[in-house]
Length: 331
Image (cartoon, rainbow, N blue to C red):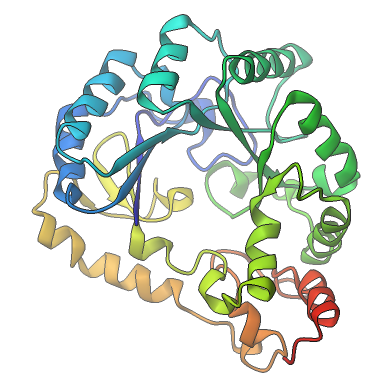
């Protein structure tokens, strides 16, 4: 399945210190719904998922989002739609109606201690909006960036907070050095801190309540035999298109503002076979030389190429070793 991120704007009402689109400093432009839909409809015969992204996607005129949805839905019968929104704004009836009708009552948002909200008022607004949507039947998935503040917290406390809000879908992500994050190195934990914290998250996790995407991707390697097939972020450049608000096309959304290779007005065949895109696909397949000799390589397959090494690799090796010992798997 192809995933297409449609960035409706490059700017935001927040100014998160890890944002790859530079937050409030992002370009104040909006996407062209007609031209963007024409590009997306090149894949109308395939199974595709389209996610409204940004910046903050709901800063763009809602009528433009509706028009894009109408144009794509009319042709791409197998298309599904979603949105990744910060939910830190007035949640109007019109936005709620769009979420229910166009997005099938499912959204994604973020909870990022230490790097997201400027004050308690913003945080309170976010929580109120989350509760409002869940009460109306919306499924809210929460993404959490594992930053320096997060690894200082007890994972059990975070999961308890999410559970009290009614959230059952959560995805923990590692930070990449893109956008605002390049100017804020203090927000990055060490790989060992992340490794130990993910182990603690595993011990605190409740699989009967949470769909914990990061942990499930690791569990799958041992329970479903998916091994390298579920390795983290090894096919993004091949199956993901990110459309910047100015129409320029990239792969991984984290690096989309700077590593774009084509425009939605270009011929589709030239886009798919673009030399820069092919090089990015090849770059994504890069395996660190030390991975080859690692006893976990047959299971891990190497982590995302965008994650940096320090005194150790960025993979959650402690958890994988622990699961291997528990299942008596032969490495």
